[in-house]
Length: 347
Image (cartoon, rainbow, N blue to C red; front, side, top):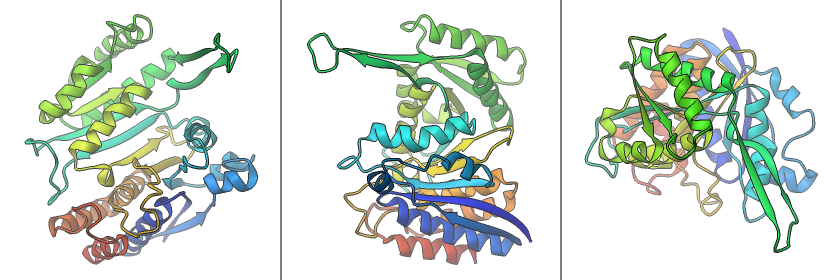
């Protein structure tokens, strides 16, 4: 059997439950498909930070580098560790070190899931630039605590970074329905977003088979609610993509169904797969977290590893489960019950 080594980072709160659930499903899928998954678990989390002063060890990145992929649960414990510490101490370093510049988030309604919109037939693939832009971490604060305090946050947009994420978006659109929405705000941000628009127009000449439209981010946000079925692939900067995909999660029924992949397209380093939702410490002890977003993320991981058939079977099992009304109402079904239903549908 072909083996794959997976780094498991359950993280905080419900991250532990949903990672365990997804791993059970993925192991079952692997067994049926005839390949092997070997998981190595790491305790890196906000608790780890409180114990050691770091979100992960100094050699954490090099430790992860030898794995085929990373499956992450959820990181965050805001009552004990500021989100700015947990994010910049674990997730962002992994994304940047492994050049996971394409954050992919699918948005569609699963069978049996009721979304808040009248529209039900949408299928949107959001692609978010993942390593620079507004989340570059460039800036600082001076005169802290005084009336003269100044905070500066600098967005970094490089030609290489913008071109590669836009090209990735064009390639995904070419594989789907041939429509690309490029998200911008060039009327207000006359340097970074005008730059983005110029590169989008330049690349469009290489993809005459793709219908590309530039939208201001506020107009695109409205379109995701008013006419989501008109959208195919959406490509956006780090900040814009982050916000728009929360809208995507909302219209697909909630964060319990929002999956994501942090992809290194040239496969020079492992990619990371994680649900969009947070650690939800308020329900972490109740056993009612919906594991579907993490299972869906795991299916994306299998597809990235080249196991497309197994990935498809996992998604078919998820859809069969939600079609029966299991995992479709927040808090109704326990995590273990949803997991067991998906496993049974796989078998």
